[in-house]
Amino acid sequence: MTTELSSIERRVIAEDLIYGGTLLLDEQRFEDWLALTASRFRYRIGAYSPEIRKEMTWLDHDRDGMHALFELLGKHHVDHATWFRHAVVQRVTQEGPETLRAVTQLAIFHTSVDVGDVHVEAGSTRLFAVARYHDELVLENGRWLLADRLARLDTRQLGIGSHVIV
Amino acid sequence: MTGSTLAGWKRNLGSPALPYVSSSIYTDPEIFEEELEKIWRRTWLLAMHESELPAPLDYRTTTIAREPVIVVRGEDGKVRAFLNVCPHRGALLLREPAGSLRTSSPSGSTKHITCMFHSWQFDARGECTAIPRRRAGYQDRLECAEAKLHQVSCEIGYGGFIWLHLDGNAPPLADHIGDAFEDMRQHLEAEPLEIFHHHKAVVSTNYKLWHDTNSEFYHDYMHHFNRVTGMQQPGYFDRHYTPYKNGHVTVSSMVVKYNAYEHGALALAESRSLSFPGLEQNGWKLLDLFPGITVNLRGSALRIDTMTPLSADKVLIEFRGLGLKSDSPEDRARRVRDHNTIWGPFGRNLPEDLLGVTNQGRGMAQGAEPLHVLHGRVENNAIHDELGLRCYYAEWSRRLGRSARAPYSETQMDLYAAPERTLSSGADAE
Image (cartoon, rainbow over all chains, first blue to last red; front, side, top):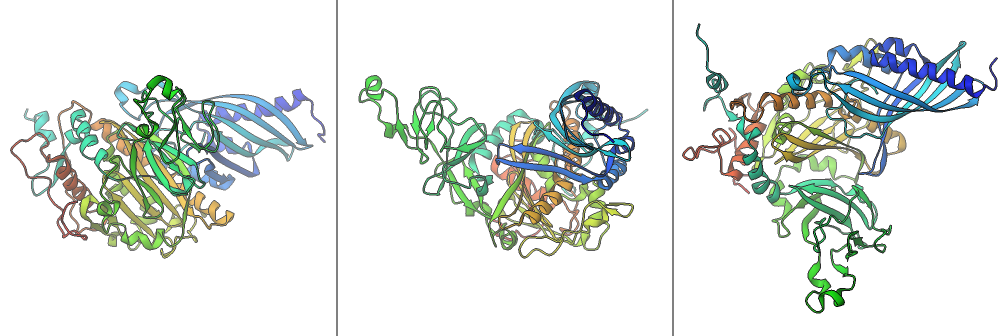
């Protein structure tokens, strides 16, 4: 039974899970990404608005809700850009024998395919958003899984927005 | 081989019987500048909600037709607006989108607007209260009383929104709104509202194309969400437009079946048990106000769109979400969730709408051969009728003194076709 993990062990667990997850999201392998989440998984996107001086929640779903969103993507008109998540795990702390918390800095790059003046812009890359993942990782059935993720955006201007999570 | 010429194809559709506008009105930089002067500098605009300034000395900043503006709640509770420019050397006074004058700045004392450049100070009534070393530098040639801030006309109303008009001596806001708000009043003025959402998008399109999208529902074909929760449900085609003077229109309600947006047994949008005072459960009403404001009341959430046109092909759109000030934390969370399911930046509908108008912006690029853009659906003012567009461009043409159909014609003075039915609040122009 895991008790107190060393800092190296904590970091390896978090980096494997978070970096592996960002690659799956980049590749839009959403079901494989959901396989990295715990049964009680909750996903939120949040941001602070200095205009109204309030915290905002822009997306909030449980595991089933995320699964349904992904399944319905094909019924929506979406930005078919390719996405590149550059993640750096900054801090990993242990909260209990089976719980870790991690803070990850994230820069998301957007390579245009079909939005705007496609003939000119397709293939060009721009920074879409900067954000931090605030993650809770739990040990479930012998595997470390993502139990809670708050993707807190610094970037609040997202152009047309996105049907795909950050 | 025979074929159409480019110009011929672009102007093939459209006639007096099939209303249209020229795409030049969406692309011409000169027409855009004229719009700023004749429309945006001369009309009432919804700038924000009073709940964005909850306490005395709270302020917000914004921009109207390139003019920076401060909106501040005075110690007396009254909201006033001023040009956000120091009369001394033209520097911007307040730089943050929002804040409180209770906090002192590095250059000045509390309760004042202080120019960071030379520390000229102004109170929340716009009066100049301090000019450092005034007597030494200006002797008796300049008094503080002469250096007050330029006051922008400001009124609060129609759901507690703050409305601005750059002219300090503007006609009453009520003259502009007319009766267009009357159907919304029962829902939005029964009790105070409160803002919970704000986000912005800069989009490569003409501002009118966004308002056009908000003024017609034919584009529901673009939205899977709207098709399954609305178009395929009873009552959808009974919704109808009502035109009002000054280019405003309303859209009547229907009962939206939110939980039809589902995957398997899971309804992603739950039936909205929450509503607004007097609004039927899962009801949906809409009000479009000239020249670019949309009040969208849908189930449990109120969405407000406002625009700041940046150029002929670029616009800043601000999206606000509001609930009731009396909401419990649980009810507020419910409203936020309902709002963002479709209208947030990661919602189901909003990215599609913005993608649609971005495509229009690209399809009607500046310098391309002008296209006849159809506004010609006539369905007895029902939901896919394009009455809202025709109503808007009648007012647009009147204000600019240009035909939206032939904007460069010096002889064709037939302004855009008036709406087919009698205006609800009198056909007389503002």
